[in-house]
Structures are given as structure tokens and as C-alpha cells.
Length: 200
Image (spheres, rainbow, N blue to C red):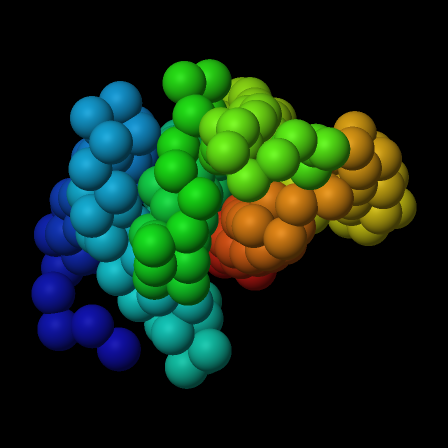
């Protein structure tokens, strides 16, 4: 039982949930800046906010945002799930593959190509896993949407299509490692954000 008058209670709830919605949108903008400026550390607030949300739900908190704030908060979480996955994957990849393959000009990595050359000839290279930024955005959109509508078979299809599309690039060890780590981080992040929307 609240000691405050109902109108004041409603105003406090509206202000609190408005602050949550603004925070989610701010965190989504920071995640976009992390990608645009190649400063992956700007995604750290997203990790904190999503972690706090997940922890609150685990503790049994039942969110009831008033009016139009519910859809706005869901939109903020969906945006974070989509745009923060790339910089988060970059952070995890940097930690997991220290001194790995150099970055290419088109978003991929440079790997050596096995040729029949001699030791005196310069080894040939090629860029693999190109277009990862765009593919990452698209896969996270599909994951968030699949979680929201409860269609898990979409995830199986996504993983199959992605594996088949990248099959030729996965012959290099560095590419395989990067593909698996990046995909797992991206899919897990988008799935977590989608789950928060569904559970909240």
C-alpha cells in the first residue's frame, strides 16, 4: 500500500519509465557510435543496462510501464539488440584473437592463400569474411524478430544460410575462429535482448 496519493504515484511511475526509455535510446545511440567510430568500448553501457534488466527480471521484478512507454522501451531494447551486437562481438574477438589476422579493406580479415610458390616468392593473400557488419545487422534483426514471434525455426534457417554462405571462407583457421566467435556473440546478444522484451 502506497503512502503517496495516486496521482503522485502515477507521475513518479511515468517519470521513472520515461527515464528508462531515454536511457535505452541513449545506449542504442552509443552502440551506433561504437560502430561508426570503431570505438567498441562505447558498447559497455549497453552490457550494463541489459545485464541490470536481466538481473531485475531474475529477481522477479514485474515491469509495468504506463501507456506508450511500453512499446518505446521494447523498441529501445530491440535497437540495442541489433546495433550493440557488432561492437560487442568486436570486443570479444579482440580479447580472443590477440595478434590474429589483420583487418581487410572491406570488413573482413586477410589470410594467406596456399599456392605452389617457392619460399622466395611473396605469399599470396585474400580477404575473407567480407561484409560482416551488414550481415551482422541483418542476422540480429532476424534473431530479435524470431524471439519476439516465437519462431525458433527461423534461427535454424539463419544459421544454416550463414554457414553455407561463408563455407568457402572457412578454410582458413583464423576465419573459422572469427566466424564462430562472432556469430555466437552476435546471436546470443540479440537473443538476450529479444528475451528481455518478451519477458518484460
